[in-house]
Structure formats: C-alpha cells, structure tokens
Amino acid sequence: MSELEIAGQVVELVRRLAGPDAQAEVTVTRADLALTRFANSFIHQNVAESGTAVRLRLHAGGRTAAGSGSLVDRDGLTALVERTLAAARLAPPDPAWPGLTPPSPVPPGTALDEATAYASPDERAARVRAFVDAAGGLETAGYCRTAYRSGAFANSAGHSAVGRMAEAAMDGIARTGGADGVARRCADRLGELDGGVLGARAAAKARAATDPVELPPGRYDVVLEPAAVADLLQNLAWFGFNGKRHAERQSFVELGTAQFDPSVTLVDDPPHASALPYDMEGTSRGALTLVDEGTTVAVAHDRRSGAEAGAASTGHGMPGASTFGPIPHNLRLLPAAARAVGGDSPSPVGPGGDGTAAGAVADADTAALVAGVKRGLLVSDFWYTRVLDPKRLVITGLTRNGVWLVEDGVPTRAVRDFRFTESYPRALGPGRVLGLGRQPVRQPDRVDGSWWEAPPLRLASWNFTGGASG
Image (tube, rainbow, N blue to C red; front, side):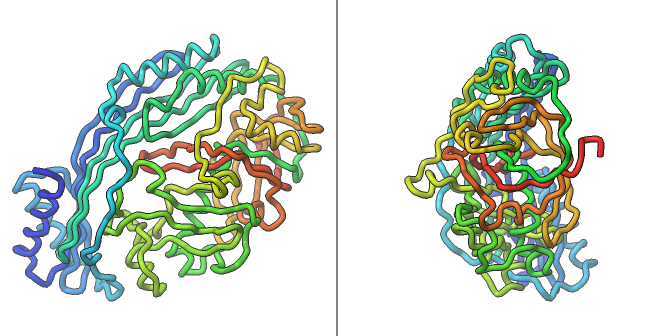
C-alpha cells in the first residue's frame, strides 16, 4: 500500500472501532536513512535503516490520545487503533481540543533530488575520502549522511496530503596538537557537498588554532561564524518563537516590538529546502517571517496553541507540541544580499591558512567582518549551551573548534576556549549588530529535516565569563 492508502485505512478503522463521532488524524512516513561515519581518518561504520512509521492522534468522548506503530498490515493497524482508543478512554478530558484540519490545498514541496534519495555508500565514502585527503595528514573524524522520506497525511474530516523530501549533510573535524577545526554543511543534494573543500577548511582552522593563549573574561566585540550563529537560531526558535511558551509568558517575544537590530530578519522557511510540505496535523508548511527588519512579528503555532491565542496554525504541528510547544526547525537569518536580491548561494569555503592565526579566516564573507574589528574575537562554534533564564533567554555555554584574538582587523593568535553567559535577544538587539555576511551557510541539525541557515555575524558585545574550566 502507498502511504496515503495506509493513512486512509487507519481512518476507516477508527470509524469502525470508535464510532462516527471520533476524530482521527494519521501521519504515515517511510524513511530511508543512511550514515557513513569516520574516525582516526578512516571509515569505521556505515549504517542504513528503512522503515515505516504510522502515527495516530485520536479524539473520542472528549478525550485525546496518540499512538504510533510500524506494522502496516491489517492486524498491525487494527492493534494501533485499539490501543490508542484504550488510552483515550483513560485520558483526562481535553476541553481545549482544537479540532481537525479541514480539507484545504497543500502545495507540492520542492523538487526531490533522486540521486540524494537513493545515494549509495560508495558516494558517501567518496566524500569522506576527499575530506581526509584534503586534511593533509591531520587526524579527522565526522560523518556524511543522506536521508529520504516519503509520507502522507489523512484525517476523518476528509483532509489529505502527500510529500517527499531528501537531504544530505556532512560534519567533520580535523585535529592537530590538541586543536580542532570544523566544517559543516547541509544541502538538498549530495552533489553540493564537496568533502575536499570542507576537509581543507577544517584542517586550516585546526592549524591556526594551535598554541592558544589565555585571555581574561569580559565583553568582547565578536565575529561569529555560521556554526556559532546556528546555536543562536536554535535557542531562539525553541524558547522564544514558540507559541505555547509565548502564551505562558515564558518567552522574551513581544509582538510588534523592535526587539532586534534593524539588520535582523528571521524567517522559518521549510520551502527553502527539501521538506515535507505539511506538518503533523496536515497543515501546509509555508515561510513564516518571525522578525522583520528588527521587529518581532510572529511566533509559531500548531492548531492547539493557535486556538488558545486566537490565531491560525502556522504549520508547526509536531509530536510532543502539547508539552513542549510548536517549534520552528528551519530558521534562516537573512543577510542583506538575500533580502535585496534573493541571493542564497552557499558561502565559498576555501582552504585558507598556512598554520598562522590568519588561517582562521577561510572565506571572504568572514574576512570582511573581521576587517572591521579593532580588538575582539573570532568564534567558530558554540556547544553545550543551556538556558539559565528562559524569559530573557540568558544562555550559558562554551566555545569550541577555535577562537582567535583579532587586532586591527587581523587574527593575531589563537585563544583558549571561553565560557559565556549571554542573553541572545540582547546580543542581537537594536544597535548591537555591527555586520552580517552576504552569503548564508546551511548548518545541519542533529536530526534530518531540521537545519539552521545564517551568514557570519558581527556583534558589538558578547559576555565571556570565564575559561572553559569554569
């Protein structure tokens, strides 16, 4: 059976077993996921899985429950409906049930790249080989992955949708003398990932990060590379532009207020890349502007949070949204070039560097921002970030994969890792963004289908509170 046929069969089973008044929505997704991992500069694991997941949400007798399964024969689907119905009978009343998505058009998603959808292990391995070779003898580790999903949605209100998506990503480090350099990229097409270019960049960054010096904590002018900016976008999405948290007054968001610098425009944009064109409730997924030239204009909603806020769903229904809230997963920080002329090509990633601190800058986009810094820091990456104050979105975390002191527009020496404590909205506030690169780079998330896209970013102040040890 096709995914749509499976979804339709579950809807019919709900009608037969739970009665005509029961409301059901069904999502069926077939996935082919493959990962080629390498460490110590050789491939040590190639794994692939194919499976079908069926998710049912059922509202019956004023109560709601959800269930999932992977058996798509008649017995398996019947068992899924029976156990979900049993769970609904035990669930508390759900007076806030928002109802089902009515029949409505769902535009087709972006064109699927068949070569990525059906990529072979050899094709991923070739990119790993290019990464390792380009690192010039440095120790390397990382992965190359491909993903293909086809799916369908159906509900008992008569609404249905179908879609397909494919994605590729590569993430690798090169290491020398205890210093790491990183290069990452996510793309709709495996053919857009050049392992040699990424490996050369990671190696150049690693060589430039050796023999770091200790600097005192304090506020520094910073240039954040796209990998670090991705962490800003992820935390803003989870804890700020989340409609449930906003309704509970646990978010910094103040709609209609100029909370960000005028250079900041943030868009959650699933159609920008290969993505399923509907959410878990069957709502069409379109581009949603969250911040327009510094002014916060929207938050993400599913049907439940939207109904509570008196707003429509923005296409952000997802498993667990009733607990965690609806979360944007495809956030873009638009550079001036993209806003003006629609440019969205990836930043060129050159080999750069001869082992000196100057090798920390591997592309012209970052170099242009660094050139304007009198005294500050160039930061490659953030990690282990945790929320201290959700309302102001104060985050603490660590730098990694390279930090450099910049003096008079030139990186002069590598610096030991810092701990930082910073309010992300404050750091991006009016007058605090001193520059945006012109070319965004899409960064992979831990799960396929989610990504964060941004150019490098120069900020007037970032609060470093100590070394990595505390």
